[in-house]
Image 1 (cartoon, one colour):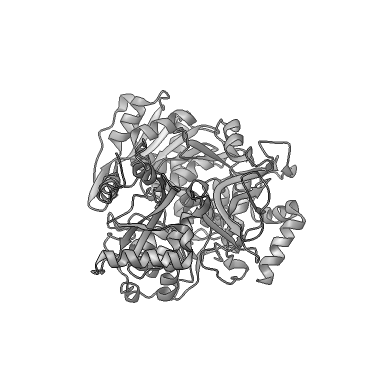
Image 2 (cartoon, rainbow, N blue to C red; image 1 turned 90 degrees about the horizontal axis):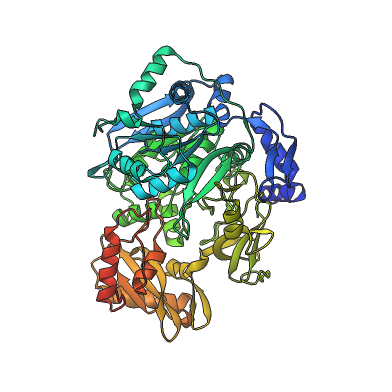
Length: 637
């Protein structure tokens, strides 16, 4: 192991408060903390209690005050609209001040909640920063989200205003946002006082002025012309910066609350030590601001660290081809790319021989980071082989806001173990417990938990739901945060995240990881992407069922591929896996962030009642899955 990682992790273990106090020296504070960690505050304690600061100041003003105002801060690249724009830190400050003035003039202030329902455009990021400048609490909802889901979020946070756009752009179509927003407000019990609508060239939306609609672009231009100065509002380090909703098992969304102080300290630390980027370099998280990756590593992390960040409005394939990521990296001299494994599987499926990679000069690209779901070894090896750079898998969650386990580039890369996101980061003491809460030996599959307190940057609670936070995350294993992931830690301390705990299947009394089976299926040279679920079986309780998406250039008979994949699983995992059912599908159902909807697939296969997931990218895929299951004699309903 790298001496630097071990040294840093042990420094944190020896004195966690001193470790984070040192990290906090990289942040501007208007008032210092009375305690680095206050165990008596909040649900499990609070970081930097008593301190005052402002996140927008630390993202923008601080760098300008240091003489770096002309440095590039935001790169907007939209193959969807054919638009490219570059914003310096000075430019971003001007935009943010104008938006903050618009919000302030309409009564938005410290503590008010503002829903941001926008596509991947600069104004979305500027609006987040404007809320932070005023001390308002933003809640970003993925643009184009269903009206009902948007309404539940408006009600839960009691939003005072909504910032939206007339439309979003998807390959081959324009998605009208305003009808969805109007329908959501009609359904919601809470009626926002104002809706700020940015009209895009591709579609203008009729405004309902009597309902508080405001032409956002016009209002911004008025404030720019007036040169309104909006100072940063001091907020408590423990005050909320944002609420980010994630799906709940009851259907009621969970509002993850992120604070101001600990959030900044953690993210600034990660940019240097995990991602290994320096101020002024370009960092690109190819995600969406509607997801936690977008919050942490499109907006706040890079700007806190003085990097340039890329706002990309497009897809890994189809805008226009499987080379679009490489064009963006080459054109903007991206040093570190962060995306989901599903994006790479899509690229690999369209361009298995990596012909597009060879078209671009990627000498500036140093590292590829993958997160959001398990990164199968074959995808990592494909990327390593063709990009010829380190490919770093790391593991984290909406709730944690940054990596629980990673291979820390900034501390010196550790040896890679395929299938593992490497080692715990400072702040996280990971243990593996059985269902009764007992520690299990190295290499044994169990519940992945994190010893409390959680480090800075993690969620502090759910919005207005402390008890729900306790019951769903803390109560099952007292003294620990339950990740709801299953996995193991090996003798070298490497973490292996095998599946969500509900993806562990019990086959004839054996606990089996569907994630481990997926890894093996993905090893087959004809397989571009795969999913394995457990389906009900009268004899064994559950048996695994595999779904394979083949690469585009595969013309072999599928029955031969079936036999080979089944044999692979038998060879790698053993007959105990009882892996015999394999079927071909054209595509897998996913959320808009790229997570495969295994739970919904399982319910369809078992003939159980199911609801259309709010986050699904294309609902038609579930019909395709149902047809394939019926053709294979599995789905009863």
